[in-house]
Image (tube, rainbow, N blue to C red; front, side, top):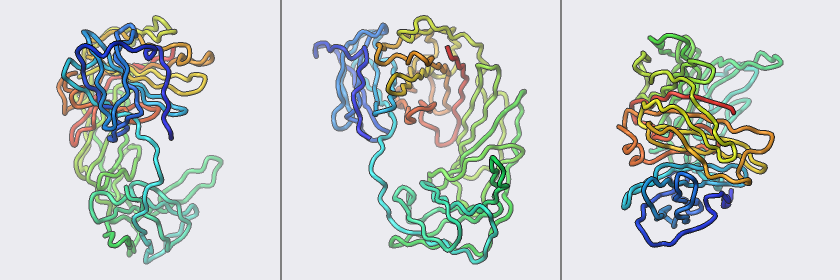
Length: 404
């Protein structure tokens, strides 16, 4: 989808090119994004400088004491803005925004699926290759393999699940059998012919030593690709034959109506145990968000001073698009004012929603480390990680949500 420039109050002018500068890199995912807009501004929204990144995503902007920098990633219907402290003179920050929808991925081959035995279902089958899931009614079947599904080597991971439906008004699907394997992809051809269907799943029983209700879910990855995402109730399900190289587990505690704690843990390999204790969560948060000026989206709060950084996420619907704005600041910060105007203000019938969250990554130590590692806001209209997920470790969050 073609990008377009969003006209914000903070892009109304541009100052002289003379003076100290810092460097901002703008990426769509991990790809340079010369269509983004980079703006340096004062805390009250007054512009210091505005530039477009070059072909490698690099932009040099004027800087001064206490300056902020905002990067605008915009499409026809969704706008994502990221604001943080502007780097010091000679320093840099990389901001990773949403990926740009491009051409249909290249098809690099076909996998033939021909189970040796039949499996009776009334709702068909799902074939998952990591980057795509296809529904089929019967086998044998030939499934095209897009390039991202090929992963990092000459092998292809595949998971086939057969379903029954209760055919109710809100149909509930149940897996009645499955088969999974890692098969070679040679000269664009792969074959999966499971001898039998698996009828049960190995499980991992979680241990939770925390008071209150803890909700768990996880996503299992094979060759770096997400294959299965499941809620975890009494036990977490594994899938025989699926070569799991990583699991990402979410654990969340609802403390009050407006506050919660969320920990995301990354486990290398196939998990053999799963335990969460009190120390795996940040301390609970008391609600303190106050909206001072709706026209400027000015808010303040009592700083909790926990974690590596505070991320304030504001989202609203304008007359023509959805805006989601992340402001990433030191954990000691206590207020923000967004430089918005009438064209970017919430529509008359909507209210801005605000999510304030403190983040702490096991890979990082403090706000400067967060900025040096880059900021990651890769979803178009959802809560993003801000920090890159660790290879193994966890990111702890404590959140307050308000709808003014």
